[in-house]
Amino acid sequence: MAGSTTVVLVDDHELVRRGVAELLEADPGIRVVGEAGSVKQGRGSILANRPDVVLLDVRLPDGSGIDLCRELRMTMPDVRCIMLTAYDDDEAMVAAVIADAAGYVLKDIRGSRLIECVHTVAAGRSALDPALVAAVRERLRGPSGDPRLAGLNPREREVLSLIADGLSNRQIGLELSIAEKTVKNYVSGLLSKLGLQSRTQAAVLHLGTRAADPFTPRSAGPSAV
Image (cartoon, rainbow, N blue to C red; front, side):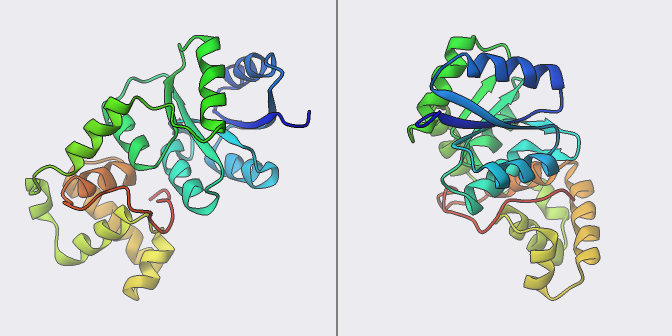
């Protein structure tokens, strides 16, 4: 239908995708043009369909929906991302704001509210709570000096900084003139030292030590380790 808001759904649970798709398509102004169950499939569907809005699960089998959101905001800035998750996770909400998501909603959201959210972000507005965005900005401008960073060697600090800038392992290797496999080893090592599970967590930690505005555009979205 001409003039409809086009949507791609990325969630690893088929029943969730089907239910959300049926809900959205009951609205005459929304058309679901693609579905995917992983980051890789989602990236392909988004590139093929060029939707107005992408609904992304935070946790996917092969990576993070937040990382994919950040990548999309750098490479396809006209695509708006809404994080759709079952987890009321403060860290994930912070990461979603950093990744420039336009919305963050729980899967128990009322259907009418989800439809409203899709229309809101398709119109170029944010569906995030302004108080949340302000709180994240304040947190990331706060005092630096997380003691965990003291355990990193200089090269690991360089790699961490480039992760926070959104570079992939390949891009970090080119930046530092080292092999991509070596970068992967550094990433694994620094995550272990910091007691973290993902690049997104590392980026949030590092950005929290920066005094500058964290919403300066980055070069690309972080990929899986």
